[in-house]
Each structure stands twice: as C-alpha cells, then as structure tokens.
Length: 288
Length: 314
Ligand SMILES: Nc1ncnc2c1ncn2[C@@H]1O[C@H](COP(=O)(O)OP(=O)(O)OP(=O)(O)O)[C@@H](O)[C@H]1O
Ligand SMILES: [Mg+2]
Image (cartoon, rainbow over all chains, first blue to last red; front, top):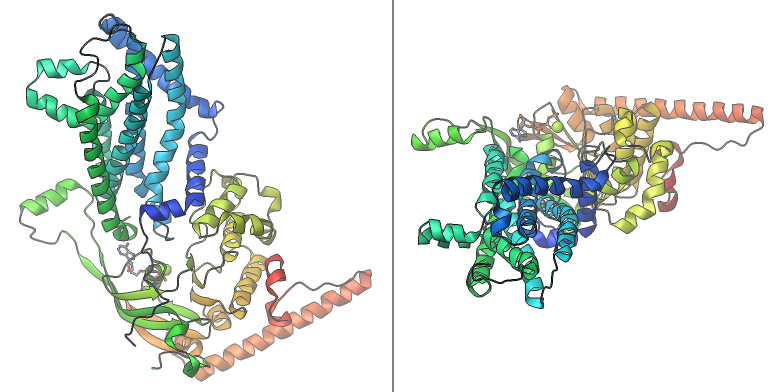
C-alpha cells in the first residue's frame, strides 16, 4: 500500500520558469488579454502608450530643462532626459504590475492550478509592448539630433534593457509574494517606484551625487542596477548625439566595472525573488 | 467499511491508480493578519498570544481512486469537499500526508474561473481552454464543437459581460467538458443553465463516464450523484466517515437503509426512463403527423454511449 507508484506524481509541482516557457501559448493569451483589457473602450487604443510618455516628457522637459535651466548645462537635454525616463517607465511598469499580479489573479489561482509565475512574467511582456513605442519616440529624437552610435553603444542599450528586465521581474516576484501575505506591499511598491526616478540620474547628472555626497553614497548609488541601466542608455542614446565628449559624460568604469557588478546584483535579486516565490506559491491559494 | 465499492476490485493493481491520497491533513488559519503593523507588534511581544486561530479542515483523510471510477464526494457545507478537490488538483498542498495523481487532472472546479468579462466569447474560449491545459491545435479543432454545444453561436463575438449569466455559464461549461484530462474533478457545477441545458450537461458527463474517464464529483444533489457515480465518500468536519457504494453513502447522509435508498433510486430511474420513452414516442407521432422525419435528440439513458466522433457534436 505504501510503495511509491511510478506513474503518479504530486499535483501542483511545477518547474517554475521553465514551465512558463513551456506554456508559451497560454502566456501569449494572457499578454493579449492584459493589453486588450488595458485599452478596452478607448478610441486611441495603444496610441496611449505613445501619448502618456510624450506628455510625461514634456512636463519634465519644461520643468527641469526650461525652468531649472538644465538644458543649458547638458547638451541635447531632451534626449538625455527621455532616455532615462524610458528606463524608469519600464521598471515601474514591470515592478508595479508584477507585484500586483498574484493578488489580481487570485480568483483564478484559487480555483485552477496553473504555473503561477505566468502572471509576473506576462507583466514583463506587457511592459515591453509599451516600451517599444517609447523607444521609437526616443530614436526619432536621437536621429534629429544627429545620433551616430557605434556597436558598443548599441550593445550597451541591450544590456541595459536586460538588466532592467531581470532586476524588475526579480523584485516583482519578491513583492508579489509579500503582497499575498501583507497587502501593505502594494504601497511600498508605489513608494519605491516614486523614489526610483530620483535615485538614478534621470532628472540630473550622476556627477552631482559624486561631488555633493560622501564617497560611499556614490558607491551604493552605482550599485543600483537602475542607475547603471540609465547610464547605459545615456551612453547608447544620448552620448552619441553630443559633440564634445567630456570626462563626466558617463561615470568612469561604467562598462568595465559597474555593468558587470550590477548584472550580478540583478541576477541575485532575480534568484532570490524566484526562490521566495517558488517556496511560497503553494500557500497562495489559501491566503488569497 | 470497504475501501472501494466497485465491481472489479480484485483485478485492480497499483498500476490502475488514478489518485492516491494518504493521511492528508490540512489546517487553515482563521484570523489572517493583513497588516504589517499587527505582525510587527506580535513579533516584538515575543510571538505570544494567538495571532492566528487554527482550524482543521481535513483530518487524516486517505483514499485510492482507480482509473475509470466515478466517485461522489458528499458531506454537509464546510465538511472539506472542495478543499479535498483543491489538494487533488494541486491548487493547495496538504500540511501532512501525500497526494499523488495522474499527470493530467483537470478541474471543472468552478465554471468560468478563467473568464474575463471584457473579452469576447471567442477570446474567452481560447483563454479558458488554455488555462484548462488545452493546446492551440486542440482548441482550434474543438472550437466549433464548443460553440455548438453552448448554443450561443450568435453571441460568440460579443463581450462576455453582455451575456446573461446562464449564457456565460453555458460557454464556460462547454469549454470545460471539451478538455480531455485523465481525471475530471467536478465541484458543484452540474446545476448550470436552464433545464434543457442542464440535462445536456449531465448527458455529457455520463458520456464521459461511459468512455471510461475517471470522475470525482462534489454535489449536494444526491439523486444526480446516484445517477452518475458508483462510489461515494462522505466527509464530516474534515474526516472521512464513509467510503463505499454510492447508495451506502447517500444512505449515510440521509440516515436511511442503503438497500431502501438503492431500491427507491432504481424505481425513480425506471420511471424517468419510461417517461422519456413515452415522450419520445409522442414526439415521433407528432413528427409523423406533420410529415417530417423524426430524429430523436441524443439521450445517454436511451441511446447508449456515443462514439468518440459524434460525442462532441451532440
Ligand atoms: N483558504 C481558506 N482559509 C481558511 N479557511 C478555509 C479556506 N478554505 C476553506 N476553509 C475552511 O475549510 C472548511 C472546508 O471548506 P470546503 O470549501 O472544503 O467545504 P465544502 O465541503 O466544499 O463545503 P460546501 O458544501 O459548502 O461547498 C470550511 O470550514 C472553510 O471555512
Ligand atoms: Mg465546496
């Protein structure tokens, strides 16, 4: 009676992200659903994903560039600003939505078994759908200002994007798990997203942190994957549009030292997020 | 108390097992802490007092279910039936004990769990089908049957939020019964839609049974349960209190004599079939009068099991 039965297996044991990849069809349907729902009943539809960052850019440009006169200190300030904003939007959307995804799909998770990591991962893909139009606008601005990137700079953009994706999905899975047990997590997520824009050189330059604060703050500052991703975007999009490369344009050792280091940091966060999520996912149904 | 109540008990070996549940127990936390402040205060105070009250929803439950068995899970509200099904489907894990199942176990646990009101019927069929484990090719292939079965073809490209609740359930049920798992778990969903559709659903379930699908049904409709299932398990406050023939289980629930229950049920069944036959005769006569050819609507009680092909289109 107690002998193991080879053709039976414990239900609800999935192989995590590998199962998400195995369920690409379902993943695609969930992504389609999310996008369809987001723009239901709108006349402009996906055009909103152009309009929103456009307006956001305009507001920041007028406030920071014109009022605070930053556009005099930084060449092509518009491109500088927007390449940072794009990174932050990607982070905010992945992190924010992934953190909410488990609770938001609680009704389903409680009734039917399916690989639960589908939900945070689908939010990553949805965010990329919104990321592409923003990138398109950014590229237009780049070409207008005479963008001439080399291969290294293009690679920097790709690496920067990957860093944001891994970091924000990892953090998203971490907070999605917290959120099941403590709904306070949602508010913390909002807080983090709000602070993140200021904790990276989006609206100012990294030299301000180096010059005005202690050295260890700068060190911690540069360990933030978002800071490095923003700088990689500056390096890829904004830097090739400027005429006079000055020493402070990008932080020293960005590519040789800070990029590998933050790849490790992001991977670590992702690993912890994945581990925690997998360890707790069996309890999701009863807690929701 | 016998552990199974089926005809061919001795031929069964472990190789024919579909579900094995051993010493399954589950405790739930009754008072959830929903804020960090509460949890923090509790931690600071040295974890004293009851942050949470515990409640034993399943207590050392064991049973084996073999391929092709049809089992009714009975019991009063809150006795742990749905919780048991959730353990079997993998939605929840037991605190102790083991649950083992075949690879493809599908819950018709709740109809329309994966439906989204803002999507069209068509999109929902695909989404829900995929959630229930169908591949794209399978859904493509069965799509027309699913829609035909639901009888709402006109509205298939309308958003589901504009459906009546019955139409919504029809479509959801159609998707669910067109999946092809090894084990079907059914929780209180047989009371779907209007009466003709309900009959159709029950017919469909019976047909699955005749084709040898393993079925675990939770229902409070004892008559229906006796109609579909051969074995019954009765739960009471998280304990398994009866496991045997379905008539024994119903008798246990009603505090009656099993033989009496069975006799009564057979009488009812015979009467129902007589009624159906008479009804069909009458329809046939009427059709002849109008000069039409009479094609009887499929009824599993009268016509025997369908072949695999026409089962989907019935
Ligand atoms: N996630 C949960 N958290 C706390 N208690 C739960 C949870 N799920 C179920 N319970 C409790 O477990 C007990 C059994 O619930 P279950 O849903 O299995 O009952 P049931 O037999 O299906 O009843 P019904 O006939 O009403 O559907 C109930 O007392 C219920 O309150
Ligand atoms: Mg129930």
